[in-house]
Length: 329
Image 1 (cartoon, rainbow, N blue to C red):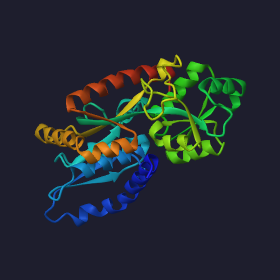
Image 2 (cartoon, rainbow, N blue to C red):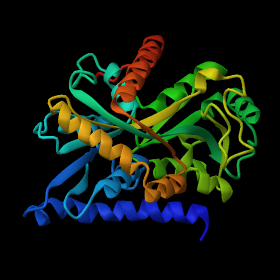
Image 3 (tube, rainbow, N blue to C red):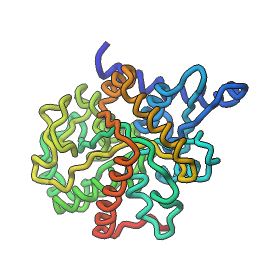
Image 4 (cartoon, rainbow, N blue to C red):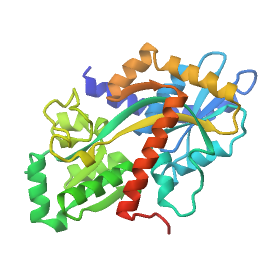
């Protein structure tokens, strides 16, 4: 069994597992405590896989933890679900950082306050992003890409799925457009797989997507990753340069995934969850799954997670001001 095949099977299994998990609270309601992890994306994507990895590692015969998918509004629907949940400590949020640090700043009327409405529990992992074109494209390097879009600006477009308008991927594309001096069209998709298929099929020139979702296709020659937003080269992509190496430091971005809960939950309950999450991140099955998913484990506590959120919020505030992007209808 190859490394890539393992990742594909894991993502497929987490998606199908969602059907059984949705009914779990009813089945387990008699005598077995049930907590839920809410995730703002559909089954089968990276956020969903991370949530299910954590839920499986923390579940036991005496305490079941289920995943509830609440896709919509660029991840905000899941945040609202957790914010309005009963403050009994039984509802958690697993989310990529941009949903709390970037998306709220794109609306004049914000649905929630990332700092007042939520309490950090623990950080779990992170990953960076990649710029890719079709594997059969004549574009072989990032320099080729720049030359191609400058020669044919009407074809300069990037596909992005999952996060929607205002996501970190959207902003990376906007930053790239600014850095190379070519207006690039953002083409949003409901899911990452749909975006990647259209790039492979030649409907869209390129994509800015999480690099773990593209490695299998890159190695199979269906996609060609030209650069990654990681600070250093990715071990499984040793020949792919970082944007920093290409003298585009503004394109450096690593997105972390954190566990949060309602700010109304008592501190004692949050502390218990913090300990459970950090213990789960050390389990062999989590280490193995993280490796298969090509994500980096980042088992950090609540205080450090809060600091990271504040730092990211400041960074994105500057970006939003410079671009003037707004998602107000």
